[in-house]
Amino acid sequence: MSKVALIGAGSIVFTKQFLNDMFNTPCMAGSTYALMGPTLWKLEKMKQYADQIIEKNNIDAHIYCTTDRRDALKDADFVILTFQVGGNAAYAHDIEIPMQYGVDQCIGDSMGPGGVFRLLRNAPVMFGIWEDMKELCPNAYVLNYVNPMGAMCTLLARGTGMKVVGLCHGVQTTMDLISGYTGVPKDEIDFINAGINHMDWFLTLTHKGKDLYPILRANMEKPEYYKNEKVRGEVMRQCGYFMTESTGHLSEYLPWFRSSDRALARYCDEPMFGGEHAAYLKFSRMIQEKFKNTDVLSIESGELEPRSKEYCSYIIEAIITGRPFRFSGNVSNKPGYITNLPADATVEVPVYADQYGFHPTYIGALPMQLAAMNQSNLTTQGLAAQAAIEADPELVYWAIAMDPLTSTKVTLNECRNMVADLFEAEAKWLPQFEGKTFKRLNDIDVPEGTVGVPVPEDPALAINNRFAKLAE
Image (cartoon, rainbow, N blue to C red):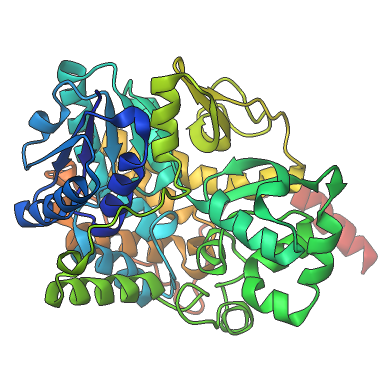
């Protein structure tokens, strides 16, 4: 009879699926679910939906709503985190302000200016949750779905003592695609994956001992397959390995796909998450408008839907029953699960859950080209996490300046002005930066004919100049 606290339960899609999954999990009979969020009417709608399923299917479960986080966390065994501070209002700034500087984001929730500022907005809430947990449920397991996943899990590892794992559905959904691309049933494919969230590499893909990569690589040379995977497919063609993220996301994480109009036209021309500018913001606004005018939960039948492939319910089941469950999780690399990535980074590797907690798998070294691409993202994630912990605006600037896409589109001073604009626009969601200044710098113009100040001649240059005169 566990207690589960769901922080951010106003999310209709996730909360609905989570409750269905938990109602399908036998060991959760008699459990209590605390639905917590800032907007009570949204929570009450979710409770009405859940109560309908409970009554119709004779499920032993108790649901209650609260806007009091401490009430939700008190005596919780599991804490599920799925919130977004600032909603679409803040998210719009993440996308629209960088675009004024030429930084064109498709999703903008994990890397780049959008990912960094999403982390900054969510960080104070995360630290508040940890302070409450230390008093109210210090031994609870935390399952984090809050983005940006990599940077957020790094922040939690460095700044809290939570027993936490970060969860995403990239591996499950990509395996569906690989099954279709190779013609092999998903459940019959064996694989080992490792890397970072949203850039997790399938190091092996086999079916009954046979390597599936030759089939996958051959098919990716065909236009009808390549059309679906213009960025991920191109990365595999060049580096040899398929990975877990779609064109829209991956095009933001590497410098080669959104850095020029030519690249955008070639690789990012598909609508809705195929690389289109601001695709996810447009989608989020559409969903928000639809749900504003339509009570989608009121037309639900009350039928218990099948258990989904999301990891959350299976992990909780494994911890309660002791039956091991393998999943792909985001964990600190401090023990060195991937040896050629930093120890203070977050990596995504196979993890086993059981009654003793989380047990990540040792991978060793990634192929060097894969580690290099991962590292390009980890630099920004590490700087962003430390910036959030210290509330240091200069570290925020450097996190964004070092971002692989941003650095192809702006100068250092343009980046500084962009970050200043973001701080000003999002100040109400960033209380930790109140009273702190972020200094803009003017560009320095050098008029034609300006003579530089006299400086000592470089000895190496002097030798070169003497050789040059001799050559004359």
